[in-house]
Length: 174
Image 1 (cartoon, rainbow, N blue to C red):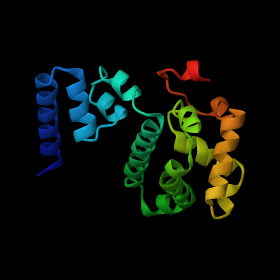
Image 2 (cartoon, rainbow, N blue to C red; image 1 turned 135 degrees about the vertical axis):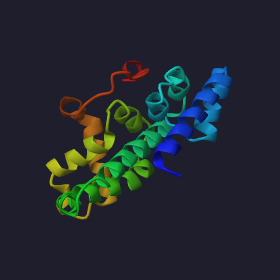
Image 3 (tube, one colour; image 1 turned 180 degrees about the vertical axis):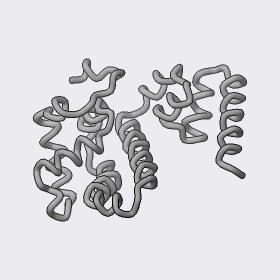
Image 4 (spheres, rainbow, N blue to C red; image 1 turned 45 degrees about the horizontal axis):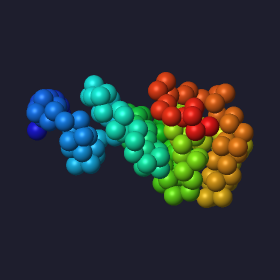
């Protein structure tokens, strides 16, 4: 099956689901729970009516889904690079892979809520690690935790990295 045909079938399937499942909670359970759609993926398919249900998920779950989605975007981008470009980005790739693997296990609920306000939490944390020269060493769990704690405590990331435009309940909890 060609990629074009897969896309065509996906679009038809999604259209059918959206037209035939009228109850928002049933639609949410179908897309999120059964098929694994993240909020960003639903929004990419122009299904924004479920945002309030995605926003009601536990903070850690929303954070982990965002990290997984961003990591998938990084991987798709890396697949477009030439061997030389991959070589040039080896440190960045290593850092992002380590963060995507370890960050969900190390972050507290309060920290997850803080980092959800960023478009790309992986970029925020890895960029800060580069600034602090942490990448020159073996990016240990301790260095990741120290970077996360520092960003969370100082709120410096807000000055340098893109924030989401729609941040539910973020202002109320801070």
